[in-house]
Length: 115
Image (cartoon, rainbow, N blue to C red; front, side, top):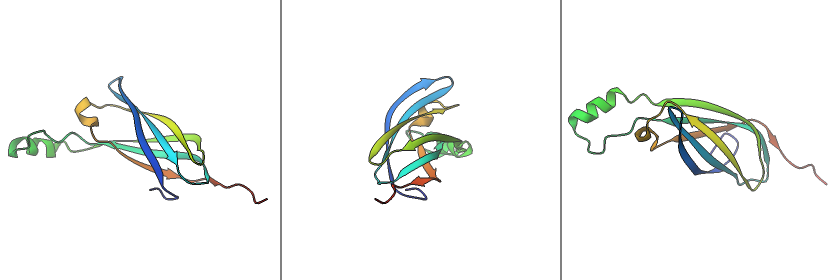
């Protein structure tokens, strides 16, 4: 959910890119409004150890600073349609992009004129 409505988000692809990963998302606008431009905030925290114990959890807790990045798009989010976007998450190791948090903001909404 955003400040102006609900959207669907689907991960379409993830591939190594430079010193991180490029992910492709599809954003579904389930409303009848057109959204002109939007921003995505991505956050990818370090991976939690597979077998947590006191030692490795202490090490993990010292490096829990998540990587964050803001992405701005001028694309329209068309009513009832998917919009494909790409994000470059760098730097990031494979184990650090197992969980990605995405938040979204929109600021311009367009509706059809009455007939």
